[in-house]
View 1 (cartoon, helix red, strand yellow):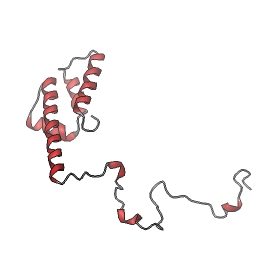
View 2 (spheres, rainbow, N blue to C red):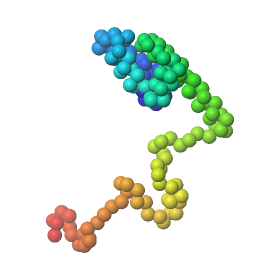
View 3 (cartoon, helix red, strand yellow):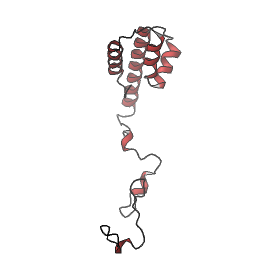
View 4 (cartoon, rainbow, N blue to C red):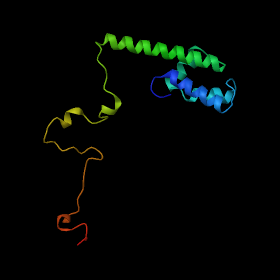
Length: 128
């Protein structure tokens, strides 16, 4: 499942099952469906709903995901509507204050460049 869109996941999964001409209520199909769920969602469904058939798994996953989205929206509203930064904008382990100095050197991975001593005198085209 990509992101939090359970409906798209179910639609794509069911289309793949039909195209492969598989049955929905066989253990292998149910196992494949549950392996595509986020771990937290899988755990909640298994713990609280104990589904046995594909339809039970599907409905329980939809219900639990709706509860999760409702709680997430409610928490967001109680926190004044401030949203956390998306993962792509977070700096991970690096403190954000490190780069506040405009003269600071950015040494994060992929941003450093090395030079061979004396390379200024070498012409890369002729390597002399």
